[in-house]
Length: 105
Image (tube, rainbow, N blue to C red; front, side, top):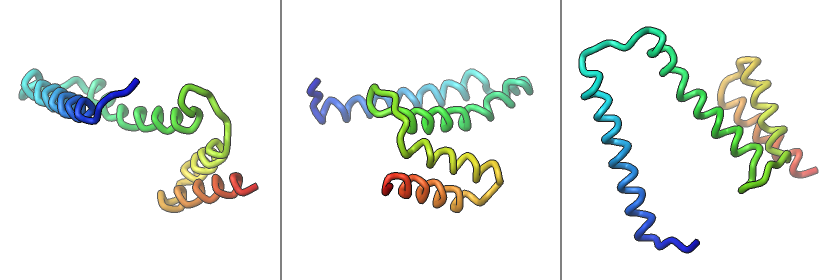
């Protein structure tokens, strides 16, 4: 499928405007009302769940194929270092080093 660059930019513009409209609509609909506590707690978990889903998708897939390659080792090292509560920069460096080491083998 060959999509022109102009069409792609118009799509980006329209999707950006739609996202902004949905965000503004939330302020209009909710107004000064407060959300129930269970809903506020649930909404706080959405960014972490979304980031986890994106990392897992990019780790275990290439295009439309399911793959288990060096990235899985890097993810495992990152998960271990996060579990051990290491600083973020240490986690990233360890995961990158483990992935590079396995790729070099």
